[in-house]
Length: 287
Length: 235
Ligand SMILES: Nc1ncnc2c1ncn2[C@@H]1O[C@H](COP(=O)(O)OP(=O)(O)O)[C@@H](O)[C@H]1O
Ligand SMILES: [Mg+2]
Image (tube, rainbow over the protein chains, first blue to last red):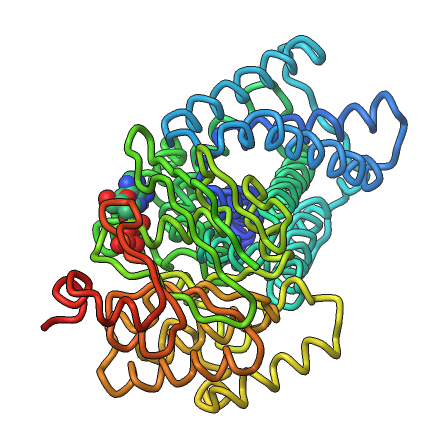
């Protein structure tokens, strides 16, 4: 029983990070129909910026995360302006190639700046909390709480503000959005900023319990794609639900089924869910 | 008010419209007639900035607008109700209308006034304001598309086949509504295959064939033109 609760909490932790990363991916896909393979590289850069700000800059963990959000958000916007915007009238395959190009570029850059070594991110929240017979680290609690708060804020932004509604409008009907006078460039830049920020938050939260290295984004982005395919490409609730479904499946599967193959669970899940619901759980575009 | 001079639009290698010249005066209803694929929607796409003309000029009140982006065009006062309506289907009726007022988003009072006008014109939209656009019937969706366009308080509205797919009774209402919008001060450029109804409310028209304008004239002239009668009105 305790093991089950412990594993459920682990699932919640991993799922929170997956959801944050998948949300950024799905928002960008929703408005521009670009499968942004470079999103995993943003995640990686987010971890490095936070790490550098803490270790070299001497900033507090939380302040370092704020800086990372801004830096990665801006890199993401820059990527939209310099790479995807000029390609707006080209074919989907060109978008994919460009996205992979950005991914390779950012990884090479990370190698150059930070080296190939695995690095450990310190955290001021390493203490262990005991609730009844269960032990949780503060870091894991921080991950869950922060992720949920961020998701609620994002939901309120999309649903309750006019600016947020422009993102939803554009994801539901791109030309419809143009025809009411919505500025496509503004929406694209804003969406890329949010996506970058979410990747930075996800990476910075999870790095103290994982490791930081140049290819750390690979598995995460692969899983984030699985999540948004499961949840419905472009769907916001789909990304959140999909993230937690995967998080729980992995933590429970690793404990009760096959611990050595836990990274396979995502793909098993993909096959099962798409067999039942080929379009994913949610149709695209809803909030 | 709105003028197209020698406008050409291509999709890839294919020239969809060529040498299109259109003039719309303030307060008018002007109709573009023509069969499917004749080039009406492409002309609208060019005016709205969705497709860039490869050559030619588009002017609104003597200012060149060809080459502007769609959002800039809406700001100049041209709004389009597209053929496939392009609604935000998972948003509510009210949210759709709110997005229609995007150019007035910072003016609370103007926004209120716009809502009032649109709901007065289409009471059914008020009744259904909390429903998603996708759940409306075809006729209601068309009303919502027109309502959303009106929310921007346009000088000129481009209406692309508003009667398509609607029951005859609703079509009649639709044309009444178009007349009313025009009476209240909005200039209208209408694309239609239903030549009879369109010419009865328009002051003049242009007939498209294979991307070119082949006949133009006042509604009376087009009505009495043998060729037009045979091709578009029937007997
Ligand atoms: N997106 C597009 N890509 C390629 N060809 C198109 C596209 N849209 C329309 N066309 C072609 O352009 C021509 C004019 O179409 P359109 O302007 O839609 O005519 P209408 O609105 O009068 O039915 C047609 O031959 C049509 O097949
Ligand atoms: Mg058409």
